[in-house]
Image (spheres, rainbow, N blue to C red):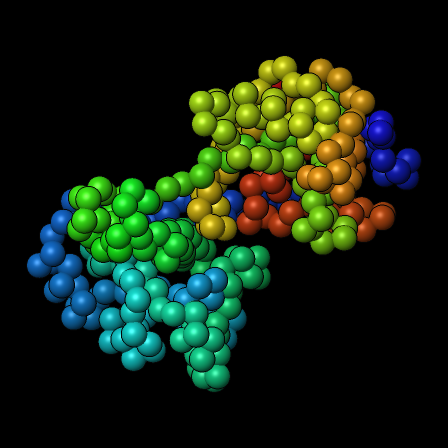
Length: 327
């Protein structure tokens, strides 16, 4: 497969006006994680009866919101949370303006039952972010809570001896009473990269994508591998493109379930695509003007890129808005 510049009817644009830059989702948290409070059991117990304390309630993939008009409220007082359903797990997220914030996990069945209540909206985090259902300040702690509660739900037994473990340190550790091993939450590093060759960029399509959407290639960083080497390996494996220079741009926590997306730009050393059909359903080169039209949702063929909540949107936009090369 060879690359193409895209439809001839897309006009060239040296520096398109894409409007105000959107906020990158799940970043710039206002929460002070206050790790020193995680061992203060007396203070944590007092927070359970403090009217200033707020908690996010979720079961499985579903998050519970108090219905509003244009925006909804994901924060509950301790009493409100207890009235919803029994807590399976709770994690101290940190402090906001001196008040404690928690993440409370309930069973998926309990979350499903709450869908019957007219005053609540029970919905997944991805939809909350993409549709802008809550104010932006809630997204980072919601991501923190979702990742941590996901870890607890799937790591209830010791990986060393198989015994049941218990949450300690305000939910930031699980301890094995049998072999005394301590278990800590994990974050999986991922590289997500826009590979460029002259004035073209490489985008691909996964089978999970909507029919019109194209995005940056991505993959997990393997043990003993740098981010730069992971960018080169993944691009070669998925598209047959060899990469030279790699430039790190920025990162994004991605709580699906608990990854850290490391956004990069990479220099392509060849342009003849050899796509891995097990990973992608399509892959090709796009010009800057075509990417700009996708960002503005004005592509003549209806092609799109990921929404502003996703780091891929910001990587593509950075390249489109840069005069010349970033590498």
